[in-house]
Every structure is written in structure tokens, then in C-alpha cells.
Length: 272
Image (cartoon, rainbow, N blue to C red; front, side):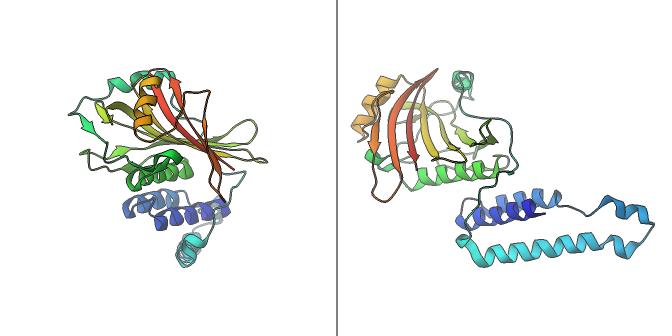
């Protein structure tokens, strides 16, 4: 029962933070309620007792009401706890060579330039602007839920919302590994570069510092991406070189451009 309550509280926090819309919150809550424990199966063996058989359902409804009311009362002040026994999905959607190679096969549509949509407010620190930050936060919500099913991101540049793909798991060292992404339609560009996807990922070992990573992936060679980003105010060298991003009182980060099969990626990571 406690895991079920924790998941409902987490959904409520994501909804109140704006990471989930009203419709997405209701859909995720309905999925969770459908998996709600319904009491012991042995109750059905004691003969027909109509009034007694309804007690587990009434009790479950009472628990839901108390949890939702409590989560709404404390709001964002409730901090999520990491649990070793958190349900996980044994899969990963971190871009592979095969994934990157298929980006060019996405459905063709009218070219869309995201120059004014995916802005960085502070390129030298890899700090996202309002819209791009909203995209990353929605991807992180998918990682927190362990699945992107039913979650989308709406951008004015596209008629249809973009579907989120998210996975999470525990590795052999019991570290929390999660990632999420959206694929962009073919012919999408960003400052003249062909951009294919936006991703987030995290790696949290149980007894040491963890790291969070955000990327923008391109169907362009790394050197071309580096030159374009340099004109935009980024100081992102080609891997294995990297630029440190130091912020007083917060986690330190690094920035670099990685070569990947089928293209390259701007990689911004923070660890603490």
C-alpha cells in the first residue's frame, strides 16, 4: 500500500509544479487507481456477504481521498524520496547508433526552424530559456514516472504535440538510470543546423554523487556544430575536451560536443 500512496503523492507534486497538465494528471491517476490493492482474495471464499465485500473498495476510496487532500495541502513542500524498491522498467531509450541512423527516416513535412523557440538564456552556462526549460522539465517528469506513455510536449511550430519516450531502471550496482527524449520531425532546423531530438538522462548511484545530462542532437558533423554554437555564445569544445561551468552554491557542470553515429550532440551535464 505504501508504494501506491507514494506514487500518488508524486503524481500530485508533478501536477502542482506544472510538469503535468490537468488531463495528463487525471490519466496517470486513473492508471494508478486501476492498480489499487483491492483487499485479500480470501474474502471471496467466506460465502456471499454483499455488505462486507464492499468494505475494501470503500476503504480504498477513503485512502485516495486522504492522500490527494494531504498532497494538495502540503503542495510542493513535500520533497520526493528515493526508494530502493521503486518500480522500474528494464529498458533504456538512450539514443543508439540505430536510433540516430533512423532519424532521417521520420515523416517529411514543411521545414520548421526552431531558432526562436529553443533559445538559451545563458549559452555560456548551457542555461535554457523559458520554452526549452519547459521541454526539459516535461522530459524529467517522464523520467520520474518511469514512462512517457500519454505525455506530450506542444510547441507552436508543430501542429501535433510531440510524444515523449521515457524509461528508467536500476543497473547492476543499484544506481538509478533514467532517460527521456522527443524526436523532432525531419527538416527541423535550429540556427541552420538539422536537429533530430532533445534528450535528458540521469545517473544516481546509491552511495555517491549523481549526474544529470541534457542534450540537443544534430544530423550534422561535430565540427560544423561547434562553429555554429561558438557564434551563438557557447564555449563547447569537441569531446574528449570539455568546458567547466561553475556556479557558486550549486552543482558544477560541463559542456562539450560529442560525435555520434549519424551526427553529433551538444551535451550539458551537472553533477553533485
